[in-house]
Image (tube, rainbow, N blue to C red; front, side):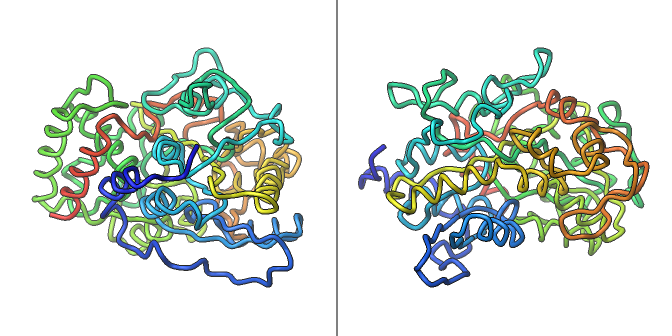
Length: 423
């Protein structure tokens, strides 16, 4: 892919302007002597964690600068300034924007040490034949770079992203306030629009994520029926945001968070009793003795797949270091680390070697915890005999209702989203 031309830059600026109010021009927070390759990684707090940075530098002998922002902010910066990062870590819903903008280059699977170990979730779309593919941008649909330069499902040896971290998301709720429901039976996205929780509801501020949480909620309540929830039409968006506007005028929503730490604070402070959540936030809160349950909605999860992308500006020694880092992520340690915050890796058998038998049984097999388990912060996040809501890896990833997606109506959905949160 070529670098951005002026027309593309103007288009992207129009699409992405206002999607992040924090400083997209800020420098990475770490400065190193340049005797080693310096790899600049732009992403979110979900994977850009200090323990990961330190371990990778130790193992690889390179310097790493992590720049973590909210999801909208990193997409804006990466799309417009590929020369300001070397690797990009976010979610698959960002791929179409990044690829079309020329911000990322193809990754050669021949240079990926563990490519053959990556499971079928990203290669074919399903872990089992009976699994739901899920609406929207299922990762398998946008992984492979086709001969015509488009993204598609047919394997070519050139891919748009490294498949690595992934999970299913839903909402968390405080069981001191809301009685625990039954996974896949009574827990429902519709709870986010339950009048009983008015003024105590939090939503993730990301138009390709939070929008689907609320769309699933409105559909679960019977307020609207989408023809295809992965490709919501303009007419359907108008109707959806009319409904959501009524809830906002009634002060139903307490706030819109932009990072995992902020979502933790929302729940810990009592500002909310139910909110969009990511798995690390639930683990953190449980470790602080805040009784938050992560729902397994009967309508299905919102799925996401992490993407590690190579900047179109990365060349030479930096590009080599980027491949080393991508291969390191799939070598075992990182997969085990992120398992302890509830995330999966695309070659789990290698992570299994770094997990205790009790950890593997709980996080991947959905079995009761044989002992107290600690999270990445060292605090107990899982009590003995607890069972992970939603069950095993296979069961959870077989129940995806929709993937985080950039829809054909993306520009219009951005407009509607920012009108919604700002008025």
